[in-house]
Length: 381
Image 1 (cartoon, rainbow, N blue to C red):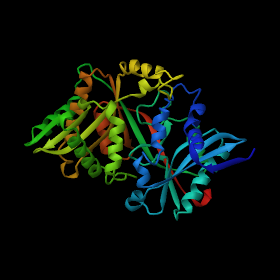
Image 2 (cartoon, rainbow, N blue to C red; image 1 turned 135 degrees about the vertical axis):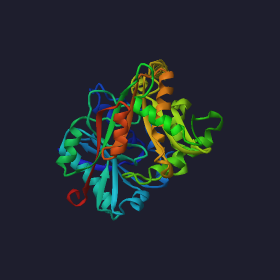
Image 3 (cartoon, rainbow, N blue to C red; image 1 turned 90 degrees about the horizontal axis):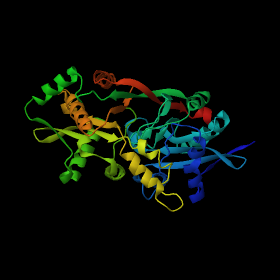
Image 4 (cartoon, rainbow, N blue to C red; image 1 turned 120 degrees about the vertical axis):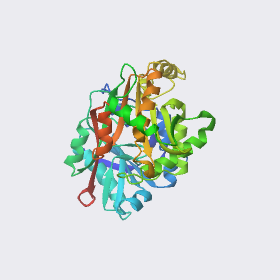
């Protein structure tokens, strides 16, 4: 039966785009349904500031009138300026286990990118490394943590069968909370040395100066990530949008900031794993007009026992001070006091050997891998 791929037009197509995973993952015990309302906001050009910085085109694949796949084609001028002027991105990929469907989706994205003068595509990114990225290729035996992608094992085969090559692996590390909440001795010694230097102190986010502290985090983030693979700077509007999304779950004790002579120099942000609670909602906050799922989320939220270390950064001029040991030590202590029993450090580039050694020294075990893929557009068009 013929496969047709068409651009998303209007609310009904957008609804079909959002709801496709709910049917694809119906039998997957580890998939966590996102809140449909949040996905609508993310795809709304009037709400998501990415649309004011880059260009996105959504596509749906249908066979016999049934939606069987989706993809987003993305042009981000910041990526082109920083990394490759001829490279576009793709993301939000979902498909049935059928290489013909996948090839049709990739081809539609390639055509759209090619019409804009691009010759290569990288992904999946949704819509940049500032949000979810990568295809899960290892570690399918447990649910994803908050803001991490999940997909069936066959996705990696769909990419390789259609000529994509591995671009970069993103590693996740699992850390079990020690009985006393203290890090390994080597990390603790490094933290004590760093804090013994003149002018160095560490503190949690101050709710009374929330805006100022978050502005400092944004400045450090853009400085620290400037040279990272595929990264793009976060604009003021994007950062404000991100903060609005995360503020309801953010705990001040889990955002630690290191200052050097009173100036913010480094930070780390850990989040409660809200996916443990979202499982109860099944993608919606209400059922039959009643806030049943909201009640379930609230109850499940009391049982969250895991955090995810989402992002960290150290300004370039302070990277030799051992500040990462300080951040890890103080945030783990805070997580211990709050009753969390496990932390995930994710994601870390596979070739960021320094960061991966830190994760190992901190007691982490590598348990999950996501992958970015790339290929030239010629063979897809």
